[in-house]
Picture 1 (tube, protein in one colour):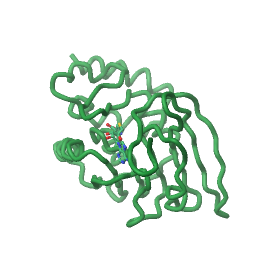
Picture 2 (cartoon, rainbow, N blue to C red):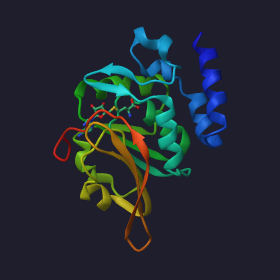
Picture 3 (cartoon, protein in one colour):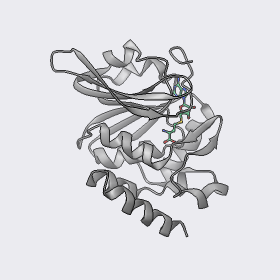
Length: 210
Ligand code: SAH
């Protein structure tokens, strides 16, 4: 049943997104990152509730962000808002075995849920960390890419500081509806910003959250 739905989505996405993103989407089973009773909904292009006031984003939004992050193999990536661990699993496939993904989650229950989902998917290059990601994670910084999957009030200075030169941050800015902002740090350390359109996310909590 969900296999046919998945094929339909793959077909639709193949004309929009790069090959390596489609490959990751094919490899990771979204049905294993949602609550049991929602498995049959896994390949509808909609967000789904995962409890603890969080949602797994709709597949289109996840792939849109991944495509715009311009990820290359072996990169070190920081994700803020692990949720189900689904996006982290896709990131893991895209950076490959020598890449590394750090993913921050503020809800203890979701840390457990995500770790369990990632383990079942045999993902070993993602570290899920229980911490307030609104200030990033300086311990293992700087990162090649930073992806924020919760609605943020602003681009925290900490995130800019934790980004490598030539790095990219994707972050949805706004309270009820968000503008997806792509931040680039140039080789000289200066910053450029570009808007990629409107989306809706769960709100970021914590020190620099809402
Ligand atoms: N990327 C996730 C979906 C994220 S939903 C997935 O693939 O399933 C947004 C997540 O951000 C929620 O799980 C929420 O608990 C988390 N969150 C909210 N504020 C946070 C903060 N300050 N630090 C880390 N995680 C946060």
